Length: 268
Image (tube, rainbow, N blue to C red):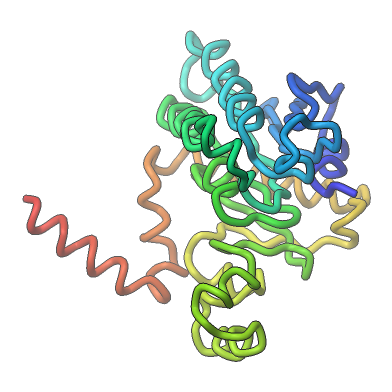
C-alpha cells in the first residue's frame, strides 16, 4: 500500500501520469488554481533494488526535477498570480541507500530535484508539501523540504525526521527505548508528528478520518487546507525565512534564530 499513491489519486481531478513508474503527476483544482501534484511511489520492478519501496533514487531525483521544471517552463510567460502551484505529496522511507547509487551520483540526482523545487518557488510558483506518510532523511530533503508551506496529516502513521529511529539509536549509542524517553524532553528527537509540528516547520496539521484510504470528507479538508496554503505562499516571502519567523519557530527555535542573527551581524 502507498499512501502517496492513494492520496494523489484522491486529490486528482484528472488522469494520473508517470514519466517513470516511481514518479507520478496529476492535476488538482484548488480554488481558482489548477495545481500540479508530484509524488514518489514504490516501484517493485525498478532496476535499482535500493529504490523499490518508494525511496528517492537516481531515476526519482531526475524525474522529480523534470516534472517540476516542466511546470516552470510552461508557465514562464504568465503573471506571478497565475503560475501554477506545485504540491509535493510525500510518503517515502528515505533516499536510496546503495553503493551503485552513490557511485552513479545519487547526490547529483537529489540536488537536481532540490534545485527544481527552489527555482519554482523563487519564480513565483507556490510550492506546497503535503506529508501523508513517512518523510525521512534525504528523501524529504529532495522531495518536500523546499516548500514555502508544509502540511501534514495528524496521524500516527506520519513520521517526519532526519533518520530512522533504529539508525538514530546506533548513531547516538542509545537504545530505541532510551531515545523515546529522551524525546519526551527534547522535541527534535521525537518521532511524533505533533511534536514535529511544534518546531516551526509545520504550517497546518490536518485531522482526517482515514489516512490510508482518504474519504470524501478527508479530500475536501485537504483541498481546503492546500488552497489556504497556496494563498499564504503567494502572500509570503519567496525564500524560506518563514521557517524562522513562524509562531512555532519563535518558541522552539530560539537558538537557531540567535545564531543566524549573530552570523548576519558578523557578515554585515
